[in-house]
Length: 393
Image 1 (tube, rainbow, N blue to C red):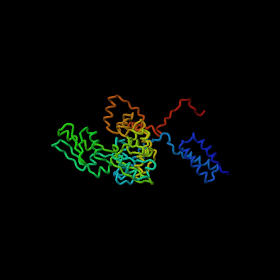
Image 2 (tube, helix red, strand yellow):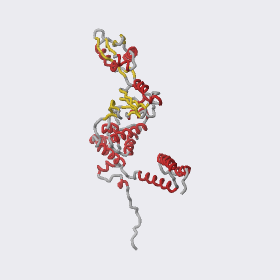
Image 3 (cartoon, rainbow, N blue to C red):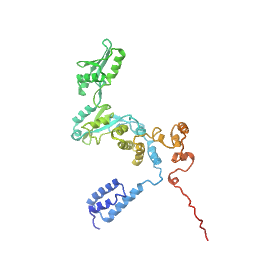
Image 4 (tube, rainbow, N blue to C red):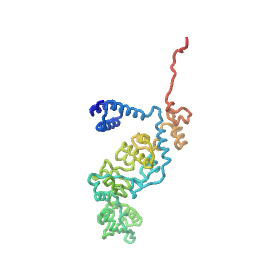
């Protein structure tokens, strides 16, 4: 048979737009056009390929009445029991540690306010990413430096009621700071007089009392001199001919404002921060990506659709909610379903006080009540229509 033209392929693919999702149609189109360049594609072959794609799509659909939530819970929970409890080094960067394995999975599903080991992966724009020195300069610029990081000695002068700080020459040179700049930062943050004697700084409290001097000494050590708040350590790593900056600590909002940063590829493992800066859809994608990466790192193969379902339910309300009694499980409409999860007596007592009624619409409450569950065959109800009885005459 004759070879079909790219125009015919385009025409046939357009007919599928109402039958299959856009992404599948687009992937099929690009694949067929690529194949048609090297292989003789006939009408019969094209029809056969389209038929196979349609069948594969239909086979992948969830059947009506299938308990997708239970299957997702089993599919994530069972491999989760095989995960280790250890923390590993991240992405080959020995200097940085990040929570992985089961603790990380729990952290994601609990939607913790801040991860135990916040981490950022910062990609730089264009030529900056290829220049090691410029990448180092950027890393130095964002690494947070406090007074404690650049001092070699501190003492409390009780006679003159002063807090005396001796700066480490090598450290301040490495951080690109000078004593006068440090003095002005301290004066501005502490609202106190700072006298500079070379590399020695004398800080006087507002009122010359011992408690005030102690408070001043504690506060002075934490004053931020340079860098971005929250970025505690920085490591540069070469990846595919480009330099990527990894950070211990996270501040997505401030980093994305910087002109050197490629905002399309820069990311953080703090899901709450992503929700705050980029919105709920970005947070949903972050939950999927972090959970899938955690499972894959442990060598566990879980279908992404189970993770997507979990991410959907965690973000369906418009904000990230945990899978727990303070989130999804605790917000169920059914009293018995809430009581079956945690703090049983508390839920039952509160429901009695409010006079709540359980409609027995879900799985858990019907199992408790000993009734068929509204899933699978239990989701179908048959009624016998009244009519005349037909018998043999």
